[in-house]
Image 1: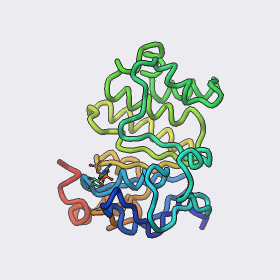
Image 2: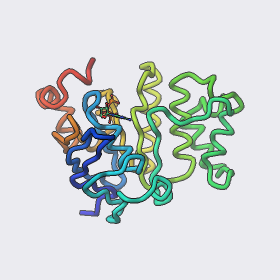
Image 3: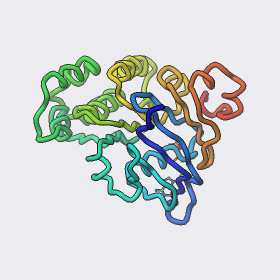
Image 4: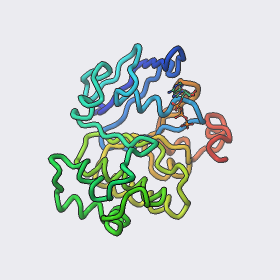
Length: 239
Ligand SMILES: Nc1ncnc2c1ncn2[C@@H]1O[C@H](COP(=O)(O)OP(=O)(O)OP(=O)(O)O)[C@@H](O)[C@H]1O
């Protein structure tokens, strides 16, 4: 079996005095789509922030291609090939869509083919190219945040809850865009509350509860078994 691109081993993260991640262990397969699910406050965002170095693990290891990265800074981890779309999306509302994209492009220049590919994935990016990003709808802002993260190729894309507050019709469009990313063999680790969305995309799933991994394995095993869903997720994801 090939080495996973990312491996977390017994990761403990504290926020101030609070022991939030309590021994998180899981792998992310290269070219796969892994989804982290779990109820509110379970520690999903903290897990992504620990991987990208915005929180520092107090103990345990995070390995990228076998190299320990848990003591590296966020910019070092980003340079090593990890892109991150935070829950708040991190876009600049007073800059145009184009300017937001330029800031995310290395050397401030676009690869034309890649930009066309992104326009195909997310048509609103092309349509509102010269509009201040603050005027976009919630779903369009989310698309812009993802477009910024993929304007340069990365080895691993971390995305935090892209469906949050997004209308169902837009969620369908996002599923199509993510399926296309999957076809392009982008390795993705997604945090998601919407189980239908997670199940439509995930190859593998990690369930976190109260700072611990309570289940991991093939998404198919969980998505095809309502009893398992009830056991691990309760009603939290279907509210
Ligand atoms: N900056 C912070 N200061 C103190 N506690 C925090 C901070 N950020 C998160 N926490 C706490 O850490 C725990 C895990 O939060 P986290 O955001 O990782 O959960 P989550 O699973 O992503 O939840 P949600 O689905 O609600 O976003 C929660 O109890 C939260 O209150």
